Image (spheres, helix red, strand yellow):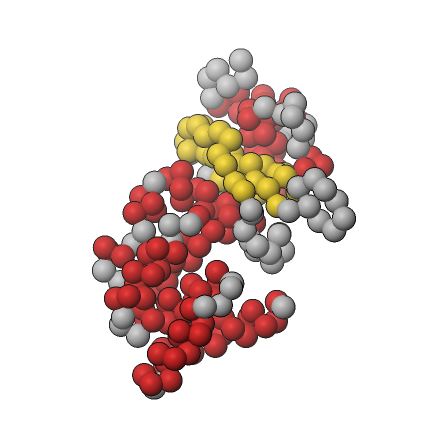
Length: 219
């Protein structure tokens, strides 16, 4: 199935370069494909051919977080008029959610966007791994149960730091507060960067590091 999907997407990329008579028929077929990724490529092919209807279709597809950033890149690639850029991309929380969805859909992660995602927390923090104040976000996401299991796969991801990353269900418990989750992510980034400030690679140490830079954080 994955190979067939890759072939379908590759075929869509070639559509703008076919004679118009063939292109129209094949774009109509691609537009009916059940995969959102192929639907996006079909809309891009139409837009790449100069059709405003393709640009409008991309704008509609971009209203959905999992596809928003790919749509933005596609519209920028063809220098589409600003009116076709999805309005939701002006919203920073929406962009952060789209970033989380795109990261989760990477082949080395889940390979597809989550079935559900919602913001858990957001705040401005001095973020030690970057040594600057950043707006950071926590998102809870959900995937269908794997195999014969009945419980969905749930995790928490963070956007806004040096890396987009997530903690999976076996590392997330109801007792973890947003501050603790930020601390865990901060520790992960500092460890990846071999930062000398990482004296204690544990929750208490992470809270202390963030508290040192953010007054009232560890209250």
